[in-house]
Length: 151
Image (cartoon, rainbow, N blue to C red; front, top):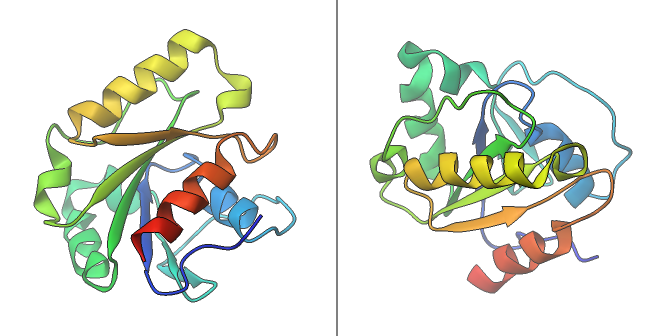
């Protein structure tokens, strides 16, 4: 698996426990271990990992807009195992940049839950969605190849 992002910075936006840091670790071929992101974290020089609270608390969403200024691609992450979504309708339109979606935790979700996660991302304005599992590797290389194709 190649590591993406040689020329394009991406920002991962999603709720707490959506799998942003775990996806980052899988893409970087690191050991998967839980780590709570407390502030903006730039990984590998190209992934901006954001705290879930930036999306969950309306008053902090402006920080996402500011942080995204350095990114060429916005990525919304929605856990297939989550019972709700924090993405407002048409949220992608606030960025004015390409927005992709990633459904995470496909390995622990039913097909119906995966489809609901895709619908949630579509309501947020996402057109291109990848279904992934950091633990099985499902969809990870396809997502990396997509990022690489944008460079």
